[in-house]
Structures are given as C-alpha cells and as structure tokens.
Image (cartoon, rainbow, N blue to C red; front, top):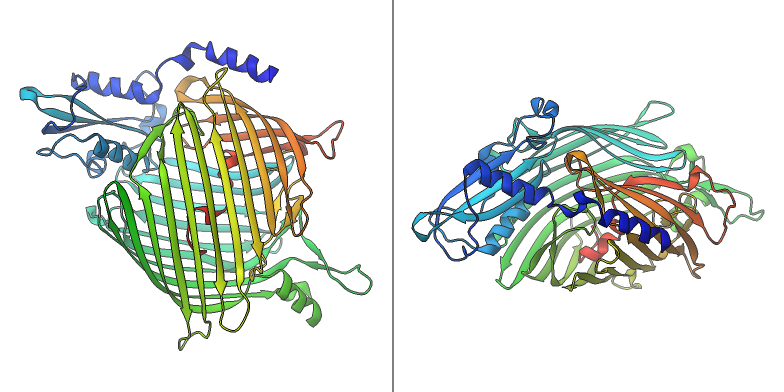
Length: 576
C-alpha cells in the first residue's frame, strides 16, 4: 500500500480536490445569474415560479470555441422533465427525481434542482443544467497490448438542434467484420410522453468486402419515466441476421474435435438468424414500496447453423451444433414479471465516476417471472421458463454494500430440466481512507444443462487484467476483483484523473476451477463533458505465469470500471 498511500496524500493536499465540484459551482452560477438565494426550509411551501438556467458546455471562464459549434439544449426540453410545477408545493423527493430524469439525458453533463426564496413565504424552483458536447465522435473500444479487439466509432448528434433528439452514424470494427449503421431516437414524440427509436446496420466482411448480414430494431412506446406514473407500454421489433465468429485473441477459436487422431480442429463460427416481436404492458402500484406488474406477448425465430465456409463434414457439423452452437428454436409466448423495490434513492459521489452524481436505489429490489411458450400455427415449441433476481443495497458511514443473486430454469414436458443457471455478486465500496477507497467484488456465474452452449471468456480487460486476451474459457465463472482507488486530481475543463492498485483472482471453467491470480496498477480518466464513464488504463502481471519482462500485451484500455462487467441475469427475471 506504500504507493497508494503516497498518491492519496498528494491528492488530498491538492487544492482543486478540496474545492466544490462541478455541480456546486453550477448552482452558484445559476443563483448569481438570477440574483436568487437558496431557501433552506422549502419543504411543503407553495411554488410560485420555475426558473431554468442552462449553461453551455464549458463554464463562462473557459474558452468558447466548442460552444460556437453547439446549439444549447432548449428551455422547453428541460422544463418538460421538471416534476415541480407552479401552484404545487416543494417536495424534496420530487426534486431529486427530476434530477435523476435530467441526468438520464445523455446530452446533459450536470443537472441540479434547488429551492430558492420567493416573496410572501412561498418558494421558487431553480433548475440548472450544463450541456455536454452533443455533436461528437463517441467511441468504445477494447485494446489489449497491440491487439485492437473491438472499436466502435459513432458520429452522433445527441441533441439535434437543442430538441433532445438523437441522430447517429455508427461504425463497428471487429477482428472479422466492419459494420455501418444509423439510428434515430425521439424520447418525447411531438412533445408527448410517447417515444420512438429505430436503428439499422449493414455488416461487411473485412477481408472480402462482401455483405454478411444486417441488424436492426424499431421501438414505439409510452415508457414509465416517473415513479408515480401508473402505466407503460412498448412494442419492439428486432432482427439480427449475420455470420458469427468467436475469437480467442487474434484468431477464430479452433475447437478440438474428438476424432480418432485428436488432431482435427473445428472453427467456432456459424450463421445466425434471429427475428423477434414483443408487445409489453406495465402497471405500477405503491408508494414507499413500488410494484411493477408486466405482461408481454411475443414471438421469435432463432436459427443457428454451421457456416458453409467452414467445410465441415456431417459428423463435425452435428458435433459443433450439439456442443457449441446456441439452440435453434421458434416460439410464441406470453410472460408475466413482477418487480418490487423500495422507493429510496440516494445521490452519491466518488464511486465509479468521481465528482459526478451517481443515482442509486437503496434497500431491496426483487423481481420474478414466468414465460410460457405454447404451440401455435407458426411454432411447435412448448416449455415454461421461470426465473428471479434479488438485490439488497445498504449504505451507512460512507460504506456502500450490495449483494445480488439470480437464477432460473426451463421446464419441458416429457424431458429433463434445462437452462439451469445461478449467478451472484457481492460488491462493496469502503469508506474513504488515506484519500481513497477500497472497492471489492466477488462474482459467481454457474450453468447446468445449457441448451445455448454459452461460453464465458476471461482474460485481458475482461476481469483478469494481466493475462492474455480471452485466455480462459468455460461455461462457469468465478471472479474476484480488489481495487484501491485514489481520490482524483482535478484538471482544467472539469477533467479528473485517478489511480488504482488492483488484484484479480478467478477463472472460467467447465468442471474444476483453476484460479488465476493477477495484480497491477492503473489510471482512470473522467471527461464529463464528453462521457459519463471513466477511461480505464490497466497494466498487470499474471502471477501464476509471471513474465520477468511483461510487454504491452499486459496493457488493457477500455471504457468503464471493471465492476461494470457483470451478467445481465442479475438485473432481470428472465433471459431475453
């Protein structure tokens, strides 16, 4: 801990780290512009007016070059999210919910709602927001040493003409394909609470330039966007028709085929054809404990077949299909899901995004459901899937503790239970000490009789930093991560830089786990005007196979914290 202690002492002595963050500065800016004063005793007072102050991308004292090329979010776009109205009364919880709704808008970097003094014992509402750069070339990537495994570049205007609409041109570069697509999203169709989005992508082979498939989705809905909204509705149609290749490192995974000589290899690649249509209705009840009841009716087609290009014989194709390809099936289904959660939300900082507010729901969240696939003129599948997930989050004395667990199974008439799965996670953010905090996470993911033959890959940026990319594979996973994260250094334009010492242990396996240990150091860079997630740099060593002079292949660069990598089942009752 010597290096961490020195770093934390330096950071805790940095004047910028002790001054107020971007949100407090923005509040003071809005108060000054309107010549207003905060009202410390506003709860229950009647509201006279709602003031909205919208700051440009960069504060007034900074250069305005980018602001010239940017159209600021319109007043009406901010006001339609405000849940406190003239004639009503000030309510702290409604103010916090308004902030959460505004922070969900990707084109706002900061949003705060505060009460200010008004004449005659009343109160006014001040809403202050700050834009993010909306016309942007966003990116997502995974770089392990010199191997660029994945690169997504999106030229997107997330706030077209200040109206909150999103228009984008997307490019995705993988080791085998190049994809070009477009998308459009309108969160408030014609100013209503109806939403619309569409996306379509063409996939090209990088070597031949031939078209290998298309991917797309269309969604129309009336989503639940406030805690007291009783009804929500959604219709979702999607397709995914393309070729799939599973890589380990820089090459397609060559599976060991069990022939007599034991020398044959079968490439892990296949044709994928998925079509789906869902209609979803949600009814919300409750106050202190919210309960959502959701009913879905839908149908899907899922077909997975070996590629002709693999030139497999009949026995090899059957072996690949039975042991590695997802299960091909068509189904018509109805499902019901019930979700209950405590209506207790908190705003915390310096967890994953440094000085930016992070909205967290405390207490419990429990969800459970069942899906019935029944024979129809289009399908013959018949099964019942059941599943559930539970989470409890506890915060006291600056310690945030979360435990999550989920599981599910499929029951089929006349045959064995399938798709049995259990996953669990324990995550803790310690109180701050020596200017930083300790973040620990334990993750488990186990499968039995999995019809989809899912393979988990660990290595590189995927949880075991310091090992080779996708070095470990299996249907089950055990992973623990321990990090000491220093306080950030504040730079110009609201940029923050922090450091990390880490230790990882875990593996992916089929039957017997062989734990792998890695350790190293890293750096986190937050640029809130461009992205909520931190840019993660990690350099580690593989303790089980220590290299005296580890090279750049031990360097991992990607977006987000390592604890962002977690199974989706932990948040949902049923698999998609």
